[in-house]
Image 1 (spheres, rainbow, N blue to C red):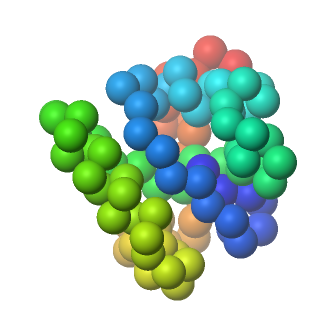
Image 2: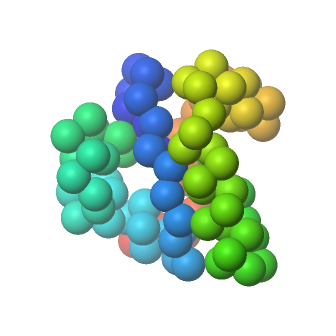
Length: 90
């Protein structure tokens, strides 16, 4: 999740991406997301095993900001909000 300026990022793990994004955009997500207005989904990865997802989350949280930007823009060059790709009941 990111803000409209793409200056701050939130990294998290969930078993239901659609529901978690809905929570974030309705201020029912984390306090960090609420405080920094991180309502745009700019990147996501799917994993079969939760352990793999948690390991990846820990890895990404330790990355420098520029590394995160490079990862995101490698698949989403314009850093567009990807919520439209999900089936959200907004």
